[in-house]
Amino acid sequence: VISSSSSAPITLFLDDLQWADAASIAAVNQLLFASGPLSHRKFFFLGCAREKDSATKWSNAVDILVAGGIHVKLDCMDEHTLNTMVSETLCLSPRLTRPLSNVIYHKTKGNPLFVSQLMRSLNKEGLLRPSLSRRRWEWDTKKIRSRRLPDDVAIFLTDSLGELPDKVQRALFVLSCFGASSESAFVESQGLDRNILKNLEIAVAQ
Image 1 (cartoon, rainbow, N blue to C red):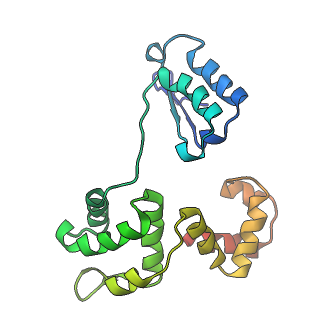
Image 2: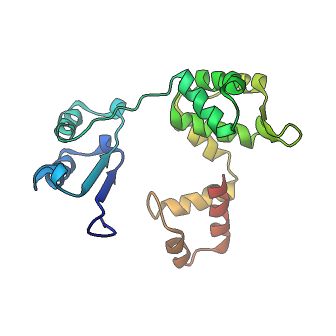
Image 3: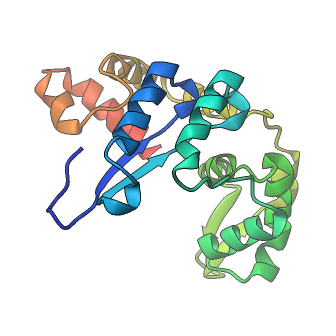
């Protein structure tokens, strides 16, 4: 954890805490509270977890962390909030985007990740596209409504990866050997085939 200056707060962000074991939670607890209240130090900790994947044992442990800070529960968006998001994304009035957001809401149940991935997919398929003649975004509501989607966003993302060309999927397989994420400079330093690097660029663009 690195702070840019003595006056800037140190920030630590940990995702997927629902998979953390008791020892890891204890280590975080020690880091946060061993030196006194967080309010007396220039330290900001942000932890994210999915409650539905959390075991009771983890929930009891994380209560210790929450007790010393603020617990923010993020639910799925309601239909009005989703329409506001779609309206701002497409730079159109909420009145115009309501039919589209209504279809998206009923397909995604307001899951933010599902919504963003679905909108990208619709754009890629030409069902959500910019119109030069009308100078605004347009969409085919009937085709979007008839589009079949899995109920789970993870399955949707997996299916999206499966639609990539075989050579791009192979490149992603190679990259996965380096961990969950890798810097481009590190990948280039490994002397990989140039075609793999080009295919990774295709995956990033998608």
